[in-house]
Length: 448
Image (cartoon, rainbow, N blue to C red; front, side):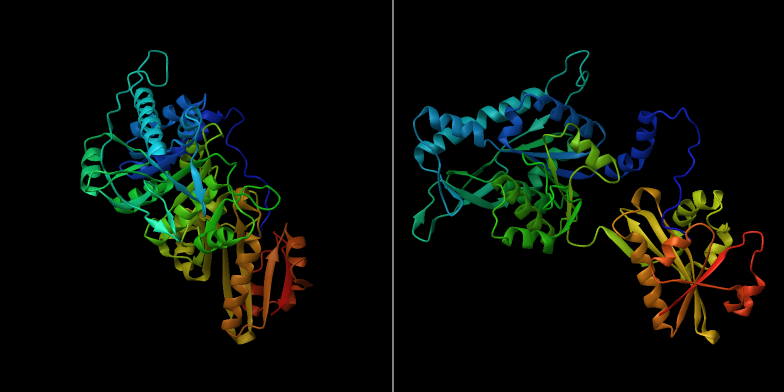
């Protein structure tokens, strides 16, 4: 019973970090193969000196069998051309006004950005990460748009919004092995061209394709708290609260958050917001359990729930290092299978990172808290307390008045949470008969 066990003993001192990372990434390689990811990035990324590195990472994803839809922006490229012509984009209520002169700059800038991306995806030089790579790129009139029109007396001219995504045509290109490339432009049935938000295009494409992931690569360090620390997970309700905050967010980040919340509401299970400035952020997010950015979901990312029979293997893997070190009493698979209804687990992205068990003695109105364990990598943010609270609630529901634990190494943790020292004679008679005098476990009680 421990939340803070020593770190598991490593199998050898000659571990290779690269080999370890490859092995740990294997489940994600299998999970992502054949999935559809929509990835959005701004014109700032296209103009950056390290943009080829991002292209290399995208090529790797394609090579691993991931179906990619890339949505690019072109804001700095457009603004540069407008400045050269002595004009600029006007904004009203945070929305762009695209007049005829601005639209000409949009077309030119978007076209050049698209060509640069296609050229990098076609790169196949020897002694480079793209050696031997052939990535067909499909771009076209996949996005039907409508004008924003006149809002509160303001005519937004050629600024538009996505009306429809040609889902069938996009899927055909993806099925053929191509990477789909969508610019921030849309077309109307009357032949007009509209300037669109890349975030709007990405969100709409993800929803239309029922994509497995929508990923925004932003210019900001990520979604952070007041202390500047990265927030690893946000629920849609928390995103809404941030967007409603009177302190404005950078437009790039705000657009990604708006797109993420709307995508989740329309069925996209996971939206990722990453800083494109961090080298390898995309690979870290997709092939490590904790990622490198902020995950936005409609439902909690970590699930505290009753254990099921198919959780036995995961619980055994969690407990094995602690049993080896003598922190916990060893349990066989057979025993765990018969007692699985006693367990609650904390699951993170398919991995069991915590567990606890409750063994009631109804006649004495007592219950034992056993097997409280949290994975060494996740002993933060009060996960042990969450498991303890769940066990206490279950005990109260059963009419239990006092909870007891037997521990050899973590007495301080239980003392800090209201458990008091007790004697062997305070235990139920059936538990006293099973007491292991070699372990000499200390007994602690807590009144509920």
